[in-house]
Image (tube, rainbow, N blue to C red):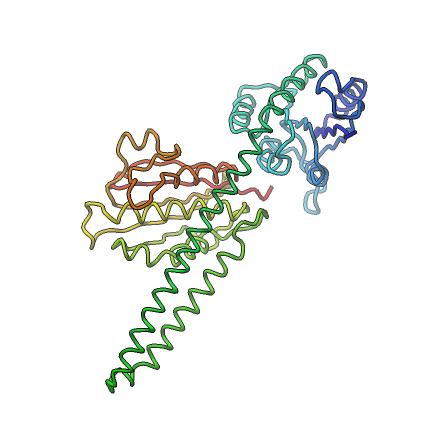
Length: 395
Protein backbone atom coordinates (compact mmCIF):
# COMPACT_ATOMS: atom_id res chain seq x y z
CA UNK A 1 0.00 0.00 0.00
CA UNK A 2 1.06 3.61 -0.50
CA UNK A 3 2.28 5.68 2.40
CA UNK A 4 0.27 8.81 3.17
CA UNK A 5 2.97 11.51 3.33
CA UNK A 6 2.67 14.62 5.48
CA UNK A 7 5.04 17.62 5.52
CA UNK A 8 4.90 20.04 8.46
CA UNK A 9 6.70 23.39 7.94
CA UNK A 10 6.77 25.16 11.29
CA UNK A 11 9.45 26.58 13.60
CA UNK A 12 7.20 26.13 16.66
CA UNK A 13 8.80 22.82 17.65
CA UNK A 14 6.55 22.10 20.62
CA UNK A 15 3.29 22.57 18.70
CA UNK A 16 4.64 20.71 15.67
CA UNK A 17 5.89 17.79 17.79
CA UNK A 18 2.55 17.42 19.58
CA UNK A 19 0.67 17.62 16.28
CA UNK A 20 2.94 15.08 14.60
CA UNK A 21 2.55 12.71 17.55
CA UNK A 22 -1.24 13.05 17.39
CA UNK A 23 -1.27 12.49 13.62
CA UNK A 24 0.68 9.25 14.09
CA UNK A 25 -2.04 7.90 16.37
CA UNK A 26 -5.00 8.35 13.98
CA UNK A 27 -6.36 5.67 11.67
CA UNK A 28 -6.00 7.03 8.15
CA UNK A 29 -8.94 5.01 6.92
CA UNK A 30 -11.15 7.20 9.11
CA UNK A 31 -10.20 10.41 7.32
CA UNK A 32 -9.09 9.48 3.80
CA UNK A 33 -10.61 6.07 3.16
CA UNK A 34 -8.90 3.01 1.69
CA UNK A 35 -5.74 2.86 -0.39
CA UNK A 36 -3.04 3.89 2.10
CA UNK A 37 -1.00 2.17 4.76
CA UNK A 38 -2.69 2.99 8.07
CA UNK A 39 0.26 4.90 9.55
CA UNK A 40 1.40 8.11 7.80
CA UNK A 41 4.97 9.15 7.02
CA UNK A 42 5.54 12.58 8.63
CA UNK A 43 8.38 15.00 7.90
CA UNK A 44 8.84 18.11 10.07
CA UNK A 45 11.10 21.00 9.00
CA UNK A 46 11.66 24.32 10.73
CA UNK A 47 12.96 26.75 8.09
CA UNK A 48 12.98 27.65 4.42
CA UNK A 49 16.16 25.82 3.48
CA UNK A 50 15.02 22.52 4.98
CA UNK A 51 11.57 22.95 3.42
CA UNK A 52 13.06 23.58 -0.03
CA UNK A 53 15.06 20.37 0.26
CA UNK A 54 12.08 18.37 1.54
CA UNK A 55 9.62 19.26 -1.24
CA UNK A 56 11.58 17.38 -3.89
CA UNK A 57 9.48 14.44 -2.63
CA UNK A 58 5.74 14.10 -3.15
CA UNK A 59 3.41 14.83 -0.22
CA UNK A 60 -0.32 14.28 0.24
CA UNK A 61 -0.76 16.89 3.00
CA UNK A 62 1.28 20.01 3.82
CA UNK A 63 0.77 22.00 7.02
CA UNK A 64 2.39 25.39 6.36
CA UNK A 65 3.06 27.95 9.06
CA UNK A 66 2.09 31.47 7.97
CA UNK A 67 5.28 32.82 9.57
CA UNK A 68 8.44 30.77 9.79
CA UNK A 69 12.16 31.60 9.84
CA UNK A 70 14.33 31.83 6.79
CA UNK A 71 17.44 29.68 6.96
CA UNK A 72 20.65 31.37 8.19
CA UNK A 73 23.32 32.29 5.67
CA UNK A 74 26.93 33.44 5.74
CA UNK A 75 26.09 37.14 5.99
CA UNK A 76 23.43 36.70 8.70
CA UNK A 77 24.29 33.54 10.66
CA UNK A 78 21.35 34.03 13.01
CA UNK A 79 17.92 32.83 11.94
CA UNK A 80 15.69 35.77 11.02
CA UNK A 81 11.91 35.83 10.81
CA UNK A 82 10.56 36.89 7.41
CA UNK A 83 7.18 38.61 7.29
CA UNK A 84 4.59 36.27 5.78
CA UNK A 85 7.38 33.90 4.74
CA UNK A 86 4.81 31.16 4.17
CA UNK A 87 2.79 33.45 1.91
CA UNK A 88 5.81 34.44 -0.18
CA UNK A 89 6.75 30.82 -0.81
CA UNK A 90 3.23 29.47 -1.20
CA UNK A 91 2.86 29.87 -5.02
CA UNK A 92 6.09 27.96 -5.57
CA UNK A 93 5.09 25.34 -3.00
CA UNK A 94 1.83 24.80 -4.88
CA UNK A 95 3.78 24.49 -8.13
CA UNK A 96 6.07 21.87 -6.59
CA UNK A 97 3.21 20.01 -4.88
CA UNK A 98 0.28 20.40 -7.32
CA UNK A 99 -1.78 17.53 -5.87
CA UNK A 100 -1.11 18.08 -2.18
CA UNK A 101 -3.70 19.40 0.25
CA UNK A 102 -2.12 22.56 1.75
CA UNK A 103 -3.44 23.94 5.04
CA UNK A 104 -2.10 27.23 6.44
CA UNK A 105 -1.51 27.55 10.17
CA UNK A 106 -0.88 30.52 12.44
CA UNK A 107 -0.81 31.18 16.17
CA UNK A 108 -1.72 34.84 15.60
CA UNK A 109 -4.84 35.20 13.39
CA UNK A 110 -4.61 38.98 13.04
CA UNK A 111 -6.66 40.82 10.42
CA UNK A 112 -3.74 41.32 8.00
CA UNK A 113 -2.83 37.62 8.37
CA UNK A 114 -6.37 36.57 7.55
CA UNK A 115 -6.48 38.79 4.46
CA UNK A 116 -3.37 37.03 3.13
CA UNK A 117 -4.87 33.64 3.90
CA UNK A 118 -8.16 34.42 2.14
CA UNK A 119 -6.27 35.60 -0.95
CA UNK A 120 -4.12 32.44 -0.93
CA UNK A 121 -7.18 30.19 -0.76
CA UNK A 122 -9.01 32.17 -3.46
CA UNK A 123 -6.03 31.72 -5.80
CA UNK A 124 -6.06 27.95 -5.21
CA UNK A 125 -2.61 28.04 -3.64
CA UNK A 126 -4.01 26.73 -0.34
CA UNK A 127 -7.00 24.59 0.62
CA UNK A 128 -7.82 25.83 4.10
CA UNK A 129 -6.66 27.71 7.21
CA UNK A 130 -6.60 26.60 10.85
CA UNK A 131 -5.52 28.58 13.96
CA UNK A 132 -2.92 26.68 15.98
CA UNK A 133 -4.88 27.25 19.17
CA UNK A 134 -7.74 25.14 17.85
CA UNK A 135 -8.09 21.68 19.43
CA UNK A 136 -6.53 18.80 17.52
CA UNK A 137 -9.99 17.37 16.75
CA UNK A 138 -10.84 20.61 14.92
CA UNK A 139 -7.60 20.43 12.93
CA UNK A 140 -8.41 16.82 12.07
CA UNK A 141 -11.92 17.74 10.94
CA UNK A 142 -10.58 20.50 8.68
CA UNK A 143 -7.97 18.14 7.27
CA UNK A 144 -10.70 15.60 6.50
CA UNK A 145 -12.81 18.21 4.66
CA UNK A 146 -9.84 19.64 2.77
CA UNK A 147 -8.69 16.18 1.65
CA UNK A 148 -12.19 15.33 0.43
CA UNK A 149 -12.38 18.57 -1.55
CA UNK A 150 -8.92 18.00 -3.01
CA UNK A 151 -9.87 14.50 -4.15
CA UNK A 152 -12.92 15.91 -5.92
CA UNK A 153 -10.85 18.38 -7.91
CA UNK A 154 -8.08 15.93 -8.85
CA UNK A 155 -10.23 14.38 -11.56
CA UNK A 156 -10.92 17.85 -12.98
CA UNK A 157 -7.20 18.64 -12.75
CA UNK A 158 -6.41 15.74 -15.08
CA UNK A 159 -8.70 17.31 -17.65
CA UNK A 160 -7.04 20.67 -17.02
CA UNK A 161 -3.58 19.20 -17.68
CA UNK A 162 -4.77 17.88 -21.03
CA UNK A 163 -6.43 21.20 -21.76
CA UNK A 164 -3.17 23.06 -21.12
CA UNK A 165 -1.39 20.66 -23.46
CA UNK A 166 -3.88 21.62 -26.16
CA UNK A 167 -3.28 25.31 -25.46
CA UNK A 168 0.46 24.86 -25.79
CA UNK A 169 0.00 22.94 -29.03
CA UNK A 170 -2.13 25.76 -30.40
CA UNK A 171 0.46 28.39 -29.47
CA UNK A 172 3.28 26.28 -30.93
CA UNK A 173 1.29 25.84 -34.13
CA UNK A 174 0.81 29.59 -34.46
CA UNK A 175 4.51 30.25 -33.89
CA UNK A 176 5.44 27.60 -36.44
CA UNK A 177 3.17 29.25 -39.00
CA UNK A 178 5.06 32.53 -38.45
CA UNK A 179 8.34 30.77 -39.18
CA UNK A 180 6.81 29.36 -42.34
CA UNK A 181 5.61 32.82 -43.36
CA UNK A 182 9.15 34.20 -43.04
CA UNK A 183 10.51 31.35 -45.18
CA UNK A 184 7.81 31.85 -47.82
CA UNK A 185 8.58 35.58 -47.93
CA UNK A 186 12.29 34.83 -48.43
CA UNK A 187 11.54 32.30 -51.17
CA UNK A 188 9.44 34.90 -53.01
CA UNK A 189 12.31 37.40 -52.89
CA UNK A 190 14.78 34.81 -54.17
CA UNK A 191 12.44 33.97 -57.07
CA UNK A 192 12.22 37.69 -57.97
CA UNK A 193 16.01 37.97 -57.93
CA UNK A 194 16.36 34.87 -60.12
CA UNK A 195 13.82 36.15 -62.65
CA UNK A 196 15.56 39.52 -62.87
CA UNK A 197 18.92 37.82 -63.45
CA UNK A 198 17.43 35.51 -66.11
CA UNK A 199 16.04 38.53 -67.93
CA UNK A 200 19.60 39.51 -68.74
CA UNK A 201 19.26 43.00 -67.25
CA UNK A 202 22.90 44.08 -66.50
CA UNK A 203 21.77 46.16 -63.51
CA UNK A 204 19.85 43.20 -62.03
CA UNK A 205 22.85 40.91 -62.58
CA UNK A 206 25.19 43.38 -60.87
CA UNK A 207 22.96 43.87 -57.81
CA UNK A 208 21.92 40.21 -57.38
CA UNK A 209 24.91 39.06 -55.25
CA UNK A 210 24.42 41.92 -52.78
CA UNK A 211 20.67 41.31 -52.61
CA UNK A 212 21.21 37.61 -51.95
CA UNK A 213 23.82 38.31 -49.27
CA UNK A 214 21.47 40.78 -47.57
CA UNK A 215 18.60 38.30 -47.67
CA UNK A 216 20.85 35.60 -46.17
CA UNK A 217 21.81 37.94 -43.34
CA UNK A 218 18.16 38.65 -42.58
CA UNK A 219 17.34 34.93 -42.63
CA UNK A 220 20.31 34.09 -40.41
CA UNK A 221 19.37 36.76 -37.88
CA UNK A 222 15.74 35.69 -37.88
CA UNK A 223 16.70 32.04 -37.57
CA UNK A 224 18.99 32.71 -34.60
CA UNK A 225 16.32 34.70 -32.75
CA UNK A 226 13.58 32.17 -33.44
CA UNK A 227 15.87 29.28 -32.46
CA UNK A 228 16.50 31.03 -29.17
CA UNK A 229 12.75 31.45 -28.72
CA UNK A 230 11.90 27.82 -29.44
CA UNK A 231 14.85 26.45 -27.47
CA UNK A 232 13.05 27.09 -24.17
CA UNK A 233 9.47 26.77 -25.42
CA UNK A 234 7.42 24.31 -23.39
CA UNK A 235 10.01 23.76 -20.67
CA UNK A 236 8.66 23.71 -17.13
CA UNK A 237 11.92 24.87 -15.57
CA UNK A 238 12.01 27.77 -13.13
CA UNK A 239 14.62 30.18 -14.48
CA UNK A 240 15.63 33.81 -14.64
CA UNK A 241 13.97 35.52 -17.60
CA UNK A 242 15.25 38.82 -19.01
CA UNK A 243 11.92 40.47 -19.80
CA UNK A 244 13.14 43.22 -22.15
CA UNK A 245 15.04 40.61 -24.15
CA UNK A 246 12.03 38.28 -24.35
CA UNK A 247 9.77 41.14 -25.44
CA UNK A 248 12.34 42.17 -28.08
CA UNK A 249 12.49 38.62 -29.46
CA UNK A 250 8.71 38.47 -29.76
CA UNK A 251 8.50 41.86 -31.47
CA UNK A 252 11.14 40.73 -33.96
CA UNK A 253 9.31 37.46 -34.53
CA UNK A 254 6.05 39.29 -35.27
CA UNK A 255 7.52 42.26 -37.16
CA UNK A 256 5.93 41.11 -40.42
CA UNK A 257 2.53 40.68 -38.78
CA UNK A 258 2.59 44.20 -37.34
CA UNK A 259 3.78 45.55 -40.69
CA UNK A 260 0.77 43.93 -42.38
CA UNK A 261 -1.48 45.73 -39.89
CA UNK A 262 0.29 49.02 -40.68
CA UNK A 263 1.43 49.29 -37.06
CA UNK A 264 4.65 50.62 -35.61
CA UNK A 265 5.95 48.83 -32.51
CA UNK A 266 7.62 50.65 -29.63
CA UNK A 267 9.37 48.87 -26.77
CA UNK A 268 9.96 50.89 -23.61
CA UNK A 269 11.76 49.53 -20.58
CA UNK A 270 12.58 50.85 -17.17
CA UNK A 271 15.83 48.88 -17.12
CA UNK A 272 17.38 46.58 -19.74
CA UNK A 273 18.38 44.23 -16.90
CA UNK A 274 14.89 43.45 -15.59
CA UNK A 275 15.04 39.74 -14.71
CA UNK A 276 12.36 37.71 -12.94
CA UNK A 277 12.52 34.06 -11.94
CA UNK A 278 9.49 32.37 -13.45
CA UNK A 279 8.29 29.62 -15.78
CA UNK A 280 9.37 31.00 -19.13
CA UNK A 281 7.20 28.97 -21.50
CA UNK A 282 3.96 29.97 -19.73
CA UNK A 283 4.99 33.63 -19.70
CA UNK A 284 5.94 33.60 -23.39
CA UNK A 285 2.62 32.07 -24.38
CA UNK A 286 0.79 34.85 -22.49
CA UNK A 287 2.93 37.54 -24.19
CA UNK A 288 2.41 35.86 -27.56
CA UNK A 289 -1.37 36.01 -27.17
CA UNK A 290 -1.28 39.71 -26.20
CA UNK A 291 0.86 40.74 -29.17
CA UNK A 292 -1.14 38.58 -31.56
CA UNK A 293 -4.37 40.23 -30.37
CA UNK A 294 -2.85 43.72 -30.62
CA UNK A 295 -1.88 43.12 -34.25
CA UNK A 296 -5.37 41.81 -34.99
CA UNK A 297 -7.00 44.80 -33.29
CA UNK A 298 -5.06 47.28 -35.42
CA UNK A 299 -5.53 45.48 -38.71
CA UNK A 300 -9.06 46.79 -39.36
CA UNK A 301 -9.36 49.62 -36.83
CA UNK A 302 -10.47 53.18 -37.53
CA UNK A 303 -7.07 54.68 -36.64
CA UNK A 304 -5.26 55.96 -39.75
CA UNK A 305 -2.57 53.53 -40.90
CA UNK A 306 0.22 56.10 -40.48
CA UNK A 307 -0.71 56.56 -36.80
CA UNK A 308 -1.19 52.94 -35.72
CA UNK A 309 1.19 51.74 -33.02
CA UNK A 310 1.69 49.19 -30.26
CA UNK A 311 3.69 50.08 -27.15
CA UNK A 312 5.12 47.39 -24.90
CA UNK A 313 6.29 48.80 -21.57
CA UNK A 314 8.34 46.74 -19.10
CA UNK A 315 8.92 47.93 -15.53
CA UNK A 316 9.99 46.39 -12.23
CA UNK A 317 8.44 46.96 -8.82
CA UNK A 318 11.47 46.09 -6.70
CA UNK A 319 9.64 46.60 -3.42
CA UNK A 320 6.97 43.99 -4.20
CA UNK A 321 9.39 41.91 -6.30
CA UNK A 322 7.20 41.76 -9.36
CA UNK A 323 7.46 42.88 -12.97
CA UNK A 324 4.80 44.76 -14.93
CA UNK A 325 4.34 44.39 -18.69
CA UNK A 326 1.86 46.69 -20.44
CA UNK A 327 0.76 46.11 -24.03
CA UNK A 328 -1.04 49.22 -25.31
CA UNK A 329 -2.44 49.79 -28.79
CA UNK A 330 -4.25 52.80 -30.24
CA UNK A 331 -6.95 50.86 -32.05
CA UNK A 332 -10.67 50.95 -31.35
CA UNK A 333 -10.38 49.56 -27.79
CA UNK A 334 -12.83 47.22 -26.05
CA UNK A 335 -16.57 47.67 -26.04
CA UNK A 336 -18.32 47.55 -22.66
CA UNK A 337 -19.80 44.17 -23.57
CA UNK A 338 -16.41 42.77 -24.59
CA UNK A 339 -14.77 43.93 -21.35
CA UNK A 340 -17.41 42.16 -19.29
CA UNK A 341 -16.48 38.78 -20.84
CA UNK A 342 -12.95 39.46 -22.07
CA UNK A 343 -11.28 36.47 -20.37
CA UNK A 344 -14.01 33.95 -21.13
CA UNK A 345 -13.51 31.32 -23.86
CA UNK A 346 -14.81 32.21 -27.30
CA UNK A 347 -15.29 35.85 -26.28
CA UNK A 348 -13.83 37.19 -29.55
CA UNK A 349 -15.47 40.15 -31.24
CA UNK A 350 -13.89 38.93 -34.52
CA UNK A 351 -15.25 35.55 -35.61
CA UNK A 352 -14.08 35.99 -39.17
CA UNK A 353 -10.72 34.77 -40.52
CA UNK A 354 -10.70 31.79 -38.13
CA UNK A 355 -10.69 33.77 -34.86
CA UNK A 356 -11.70 31.48 -32.00
CA UNK A 357 -11.82 33.93 -29.09
CA UNK A 358 -9.25 32.04 -27.02
CA UNK A 359 -6.33 34.49 -26.92
CA UNK A 360 -6.94 36.30 -23.63
CA UNK A 361 -8.47 33.16 -22.13
CA UNK A 362 -5.19 31.35 -22.79
CA UNK A 363 -3.17 34.30 -21.47
CA UNK A 364 -5.17 34.27 -18.23
CA UNK A 365 -4.53 30.55 -17.73
CA UNK A 366 -0.81 30.99 -18.36
CA UNK A 367 -0.57 33.88 -15.87
CA UNK A 368 -2.46 31.91 -13.23
CA UNK A 369 -0.03 29.05 -13.79
CA UNK A 370 2.92 31.26 -12.75
CA UNK A 371 1.10 32.96 -9.87
CA UNK A 372 0.64 36.22 -11.78
CA UNK A 373 -2.37 38.20 -12.95
CA UNK A 374 -3.74 39.88 -16.06
CA UNK A 375 -6.00 42.92 -16.43
CA UNK A 376 -7.62 44.43 -19.51
CA UNK A 377 -9.04 47.92 -19.91
CA UNK A 378 -9.35 50.78 -22.35
CA UNK A 379 -6.39 53.13 -22.44
CA UNK A 380 -6.99 56.73 -21.37
CA UNK A 381 -5.47 57.79 -24.72
CA UNK A 382 -7.76 55.51 -26.71
CA UNK A 383 -7.24 51.90 -27.68
CA UNK A 384 -6.76 48.82 -25.51
CA UNK A 385 -4.37 48.20 -22.63
CA UNK A 386 -3.57 44.79 -21.17
CA UNK A 387 -1.35 44.52 -18.09
CA UNK A 388 0.57 41.45 -16.90
CA UNK A 389 1.81 41.29 -13.31
CA UNK A 390 4.62 38.74 -12.99
CA UNK A 391 5.84 37.72 -9.52
CA UNK A 392 9.51 36.91 -8.96
CA UNK A 393 9.53 33.30 -7.72
CA UNK A 394 13.23 33.34 -6.81
CA UNK A 395 12.42 32.80 -3.14
